[in-house]
Length: 242
Image 1 (tube, helix red, strand yellow):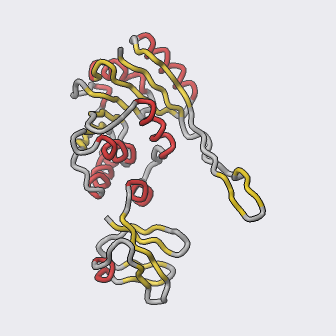
Image 2 (spheres, helix red, strand yellow; image 1 turned 45 degrees about the vertical axis):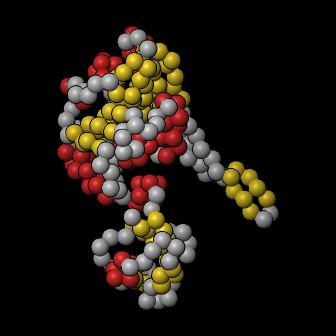
Image 3 (cartoon, helix red, strand yellow; image 1 turned 135 degrees about the horizontal axis):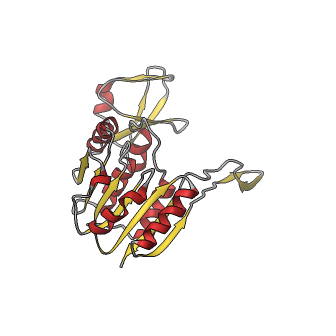
């Protein structure tokens, strides 16, 4: 999959039609015959560089229609659960499929992600996005995870739900020994209740945290933290089945 990047760094996902921008247009035939590293010019002479899209490029440009979990939180979740190649994951709360695509990319061809989504419109968007990235190790399910998890012996259950505690019992049954439950919740009251339920259901190594990211502004006159930052997005809670 290829993308086009203009002189200011703005990215454009390549479709099947001509690319039309404020800086002119590029014919689809020219785009189709291009290779990563090529420089294409619009009819106004503005340059666009062709790049091979990585997963972050794709998630940034894909159809969303709802909020997604940001890379900073997905990266922390991956690190704390040890998610890796060949593992099997159950996700609940597919949304647009950003976390689905991210985790499927991590577990690779020998792993698999099973994702539950109650809303049919979100499930359809996620299906389009997963297919658009060319992933074949994802199973999307338009069904209520509160009624049960079909899979067994999985490495990770990841919950992006308003009431994740309603799925804790099903998650414990689905997890293999040593597997992790991870939940993403925006409010601290959710964290408090979820921790209490996880403890009652004998999950170990309970941990809750948030990840704050602030970039550094580098200029000729000096270096300092940026005045704007990606602050609170949500809390991550972890528990391990031991």
